Image 1 (cartoon, rainbow, N blue to C red):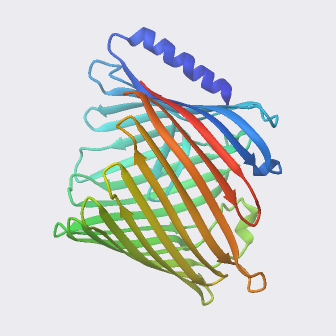
Image 2 (image 1 turned 45 degrees about the vertical axis):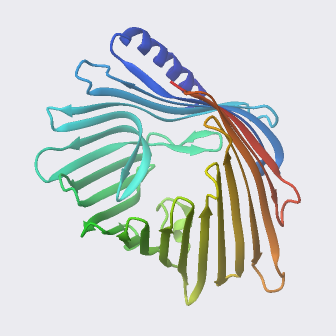
Image 3 (image 1 turned 120 degrees about the horizontal axis):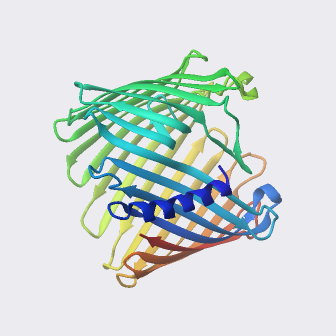
Length: 404
C-alpha cells in the first residue's frame, strides 16, 4: 500500500476520533525526519528527504475494552533525485481479545511471528487459549513484500501458519509451529519450527530454537544457549548457532550450493557499581570445509560523574578471509533533564587479501536531543564515513517527535 493508503489511514483516524470520542483513547507517536545522505543505488548522488512516520493505537473503542486498532506507516518526499512522494503501510489491524474468553482475533495488515517463520501479511491471526496447558495459533493471508518503489507481488503470494505453545507456566515456554509460503501458486517455503525456554534454580536460563526446511530436507537454523546469573551483577552466556542458507524454491538462488555457517559464543558481563561495568567474550566462527575464524571482544562502560557516560569496545578477528581489529568509542553527556549530547568514533583496521595490505575504515558522529515538553522532542545526528570507498561521506538527520 502506497501513499494513497497512508492518506486513507489519516482520514480513517480523524473519522474514528469524531465518531467514538465518547470512549476511545488514541495514543501514538508522530516522527517527522529531515534526512540527507548519499544514495548508493543512484551512484551515490546526494539525496534529501522529508519523511513522516506515524504509529498509533486506538483503545477502549467498545465498553468492554476488548477491541483496539493499531497502525504504523511511513511517507517520504524526495527533493533531489526524482523519486518523488512514496509511502509504506507496515501494519493496520483490528485486535479483538477474549472473545468468549477463549479467542484473540487480529484482522488486517500485521506482522506475524512463529518459531517456524515470520512475515507481514494482509490477513488474520486467531489465537485459541484458556482450554488447557496448550494454546493454538492459526494465521494466514497475502504475503506483503516491499521493493524499492513500493509493494511487489500479487494475490498469489500467500502465507499460512499453525502453532501450538505452552501457556500458564511461569518458568517454561515452548512452541512448535509450521509455516508455509506460496509464490505464484507454488510452494516456496515449508518450515517446521521449534522454540523453548526454561528457567532453572532462579539463576539459570536455558533456551533453544530450530527450523527445519521440508523442501530442502535440512535444518536451516539451529540455536542453543545458556545464561547463568551467579549474582545480580554478573552474567555468563554460552551459545551455539548454526545456519544453512536456503532460499524460496521459486528463486534462482535455490540452485546454488552454499556452506553451513556456525559459531560458538562465550561472554561475561559484570557490573562493578554505578560507575563501572565490563564485558568480554570469545566467538569461534566456522564457514565449512575447515575454514574458521576467532573473534575476541572486550568492552568497558564508565560513568566518572553522573552526567557523563563513556563506552569503549574492542574487537579482534583473525582467520578465514582476512583479519580485522577495531575500536568503538562513544560518550554521552546529560546537560540537564531536557537535553543530551553524544558523540563517537569507530576505527577499524582490516585485511581482506594478503596482497592488498591493511585498509582503514573510520566513522565519526555527533548527536543530540532536546525535550521541548513532556511529549515533544527534537533530536539530530550527523556522521562522516571515511574508508576505501569514500574519502568523505557525510549524512545526517533531524527529527521532531510528538507523542499523543
